[in-house]
Image (cartoon, rainbow over all chains, first blue to last red; front, side, top):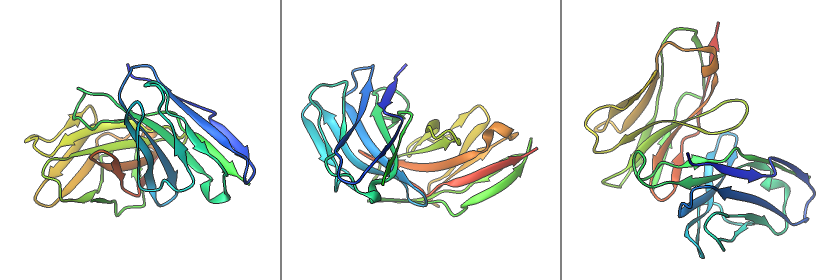
Length: 115
Length: 111
C-alpha cells in the first residue's frame, strides 16, 4: 500500500526563519505534489514533480521552493516564511494503475503557523 | 482550466439517513476524472470514490455512490445510512495533472 509521510506534523515558527517540510513515499512513484489548504479555498497546488529533477509550478508557487533529487523525497522549502503562509500543507503521490490515472494519495498533513 | 463548485457549505443529517452532497464542475478536457475526498477533524485527506468521464455506470464504494450526470456536469456524492463517523468535510475534486478542489461541504451527523 502506498504510504506518504510528512514531517513535521505541526510547526510554529517566526517570520523569515527558513524551514523545510519533508515528504517521502515508500512506493517509488514518479509523481509527487504539494498542496496548501486554507478555509474557503479548498486545496491549491503549490508545486508538483513528474520525476527526479523535474518540477513545475502549481497555482500558488510564490514563496516556496521544492527539490526532487531522488524519487522517494520531495521537500517543500520556505526560504523566508511569512504569516500568509500559515496553512495546512499536504504532500500527495500519484500511483499508476489504480482507479483512474489521476488518483492521488495524501500524506497526513503539516500544520504550519508563521508568527 | 477546471473549476469545481460545491454550493452547500454545511449541512446536518440525521444518523442512518442518506445525504446527497452537490458538486458541479467545469472543464474543457474531453477526458477527466472526478473524486470525492473526506477530511475528518483530525485533518487527513481520505480518498472515497472515483468516477471517470467515460465510465458509463455510476461509481459505488460501499455506502458511497456518485451520481454522475455528464450533461449537467454534476457529480453528486450520496452517502447512505449515515454514521456518526461520517461527520467531516467533503471535497469534490477534478483531476488532471493537478487536482482542482471545490470549497468543501461540512457534514455533521446528528445522533
